Image 1 (cartoon, rainbow, N blue to C red):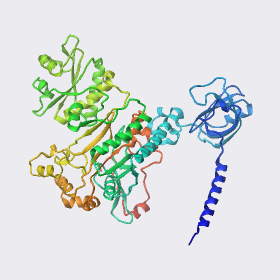
Image 2 (tube, rainbow, N blue to C red):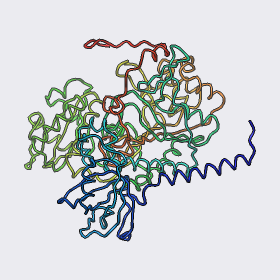
Image 3 (cartoon, one colour):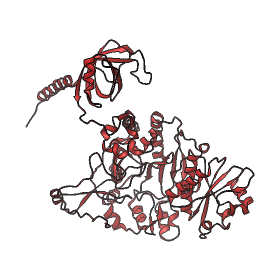
Image 4 (cartoon, one colour):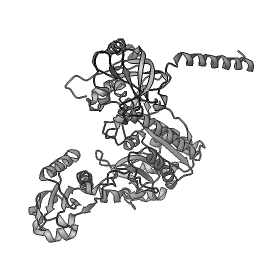
Length: 622
């Protein structure tokens, strides 16, 4: 079939006329519920929204609060028949009213429309609430049970306090897109149905109907695709990318899916990536964050090993001014059992000055750390007379002078202690440090955003389960030292655990907020890196065929990162749960209570996919 230009023009004209007619039919309001001001007094208006509340004062006077996306407006009903009409309307029904604006005698400065009210002359129910009771009060929905809120999320989102987080999310994403485009990045989408790939978490698998016995996987991240885009000749890529990981929920992590601002740069190194992210993220936090003090760029860079030694974590909250001290030489041999378990036992101390906590608070602190780490912590104090008291003081008092000098203690100091293998002692003391910061406002300047980069991550580690060498952070990263350092490690000339990688994490207020690396774009280096973890060239080709083959055709050096959007919004809003900033979140068990997902499917659907469901009997292990 052929079309000429005049046919196309006529089609556009018809579409334009139709659009205008539809607009006429659906334009049912003159103003929104957050718009009217004192200058509108005397105007005839039409408003649409939800009837939030009605307060009747006698038979011929009532006050009605009407709400829409934009705000609230007070209606004053002064006619007996009109009062009856509103009384017949259930709360949270959608209504349309016509009326006249007038100045309020008792103004409400707390809301933008507080200088005016509307006297309705007519009311029409557009959508009736057919339920006599609501599952919770809309404006107090954040106080309701979380599962109830998730089941009725469409009601929860009517609460302006809940809705504002989602509005802010939209604005932040739009700002990120603007700033990244301004920096020369192209927004490009990558596939959702792809191949299963070892990314460090469980895949969500999708059976392939046309390929019996085979599965797609939902991407844990667009990692391989964005590297392939660099190999394809694109220079700067980004997308607000959905990622899917079958992992457990935490306060700062949602199960199932999450979003990240994925980005990659060709002919770039670590400095280029860090500079771009600092340039993009600081303005976003300045514009939308609840705290007005923000770390200026360039951010502090802390090597991984230094972060573990000073803060006991690779996600340090730098708002806390406490640091770990090594107390191994001071306290080894004091006779306290946990300090003497083995020759490799290390002892880490956190010293807090002018500590005012009660014994009950200290006991709770120790219990909280144990719940989080499964490790015990210990403590003692220096009283106003300079004596060692409390906790394990009977073991420390005999060596008081050495300990006081070694840790720089003075009257009023509290010393928290953790012991074990180096990593265990560091991590336990790190949790203790964080909780002490929350307990001692003097040592935590809370109302700010503290950014830092953690750099020089180890390339390899000993796996907790396997007991063998494994990749520590990202298998696609470039080792610091390239092929030469890997060859030396293979010959036994260098300890593989000493090899660092060009990997970096952005940490904001103790949360890992972005992760990235300079990529290993050389097939020879890639194969050698995987050989260190007992995978040969054939394994690399089999697991990453597209990437390996693409790199053999000449790949540019490239680097990238991926700030987490959900976590970023959580930090900007000051919310403690990430579910508060996601439009339709799952619960802690990765269930969507509103849509009743996951759900069973029919035998017919399973047959089409050549699948059979075997559900374990209750009480039996899978």
